[in-house]
Length: 329
Image 1 (tube, rainbow, N blue to C red):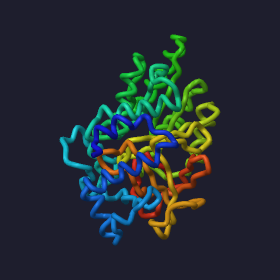
Image 2: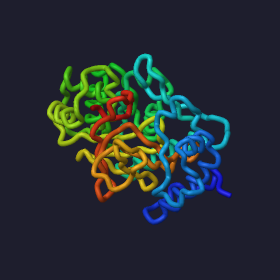
Image 3: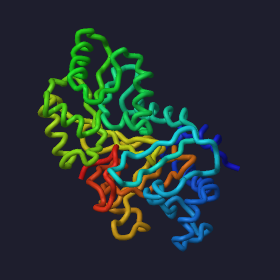
Image 4: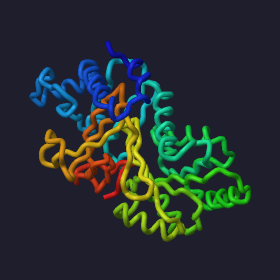
């Protein structure tokens, strides 16, 4: 019989050849031990016994995390991550069974795409996120800051001049570590507008999240503006959300790459059960690191996916909330 421990032990060994087998095992485990997910499938009129392969697995709408405890089995909650939401809006809650696994996963993914965390000075510009204290992004950033081993790695709120001074201090030290500045979009825009610092030697990464702070713009418009103001060649992006355990990264070409245990599928915008060979549509995520909640998530993002599994995010469905760690319209 499969258990949380058995999935946890095998997670980082997943590859293209084993993905579907792992996903199928995890689906059977979740549908039999997650009452919310099981009830959702039943209400669709689908006989669970009729689902025979990964391609037939139903995806749980992401809104369920706002109104239900999405948990596979019952266990002691180690952490509760909440979405940022907008004023008066319901927030999503992701209950985490094992924070060590969550943070190990985030660091493994970063290492996969960018190299060792210890090779970076980690600067995080996350106003409004830090104040809430329940953000998965802040939890990940705090872990990265500590792992980096740099005296310069830190959080920044509205102290933009201090951030610029820190970059200058790092340059004077002339060490071998690279500089990463990761920030929410509206904060990076403010830094660019007010100071336009020369950050030619800094990896700039935006995590989305205009959060209703200002008029929203496209990712392309944002990147072009930041490239010009910061004197950099490209802007990197992180794609993640409260309801997931894994992240995807774009290294400056607008296309996101996923770790081996995460896959993006596209659904028909008018028929959420029609999933497969679509050029564009709603984004569905299989995140096999979501062992204790639900690994099969129907998001409110719109996008495209290519033959290599890389995806672009085009925007959101009109009725979706403005979430942190997500794309602007």
